[in-house]
Length: 376
Image (cartoon, rainbow, N blue to C red; front, side, top):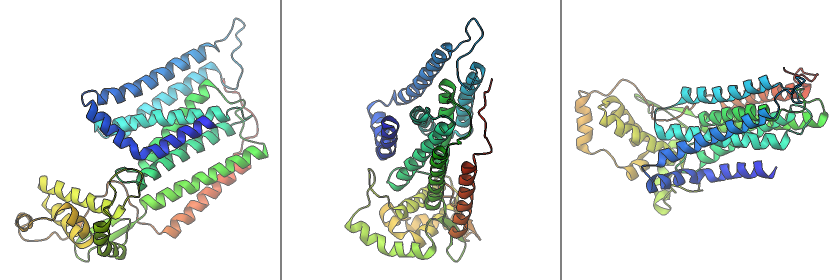
């Protein structure tokens, strides 16, 4: 387990510095940065394909027509590899943003988590049933959650459920590939008590990790200014008011960190989202949005404005002139770059516990499978 754990720790605790490394690489070789990243992704794909071909050639049917031992035929193994490639390419095309920097980073995630899945699978594939592959899936997805959670907590990085999903898809593709090259000894669902216990524990921990991540990152509040402005935040209105009262003095005494392995101030981050949306709206002549975002900033994020810059009297007058002196009847902000859901936490956790309990029960019951299968 040394290699998969080492790789996982490197990914999780190296994530706060990954952006800085990319920035340094881009500054040192601006003309070749994209080529380097794309080259790494392509090289990894080529190496994986060559390894797959070499491995499958070893198991070609001999003169008697007998194939390699194991529960999967050569044909099914080829199908699994093709499925891994199709899923990765299809997912990448579906979620691509059109921004080369973002799309390259997401493509690199497939390399990272494909390798992580392969390492965990190699560590557990000696188990006599599917528990090795299932535990590898749980471990790989858990690493992806930990990675995004760390990125969410540190300044300069962003972690959200979209990226957790990306990591999970990469893990699935890595496991399809790994299973094709080195099938488990049996395709039976875990029947031994130790295997079922380990799987139940892994699934339970994974469910708690997913629910905890969603709770911390994606559950929040819809805030109204009492007039015409509505926006979503991880804080409710009293919490925003308290932060607006305390952050100015705190930042004067100790400026918030901007990078590295330190705790991010999410109040500051939210305020900067609204500043960016306000400035974009002014640049694109979205006067209702410019007015609304400035109201949000002045009402709830005044200390952020003190750092980022307030609108001048002339700018406010220009916005008012463009609006014919009339404020919009209602403005709903879209400044937050990822979803924030307004749900009762008690209801969310009750649902999460029920879903997690159902999954653990399913694993404990053996998933309805009792016999080993041979797919040919």
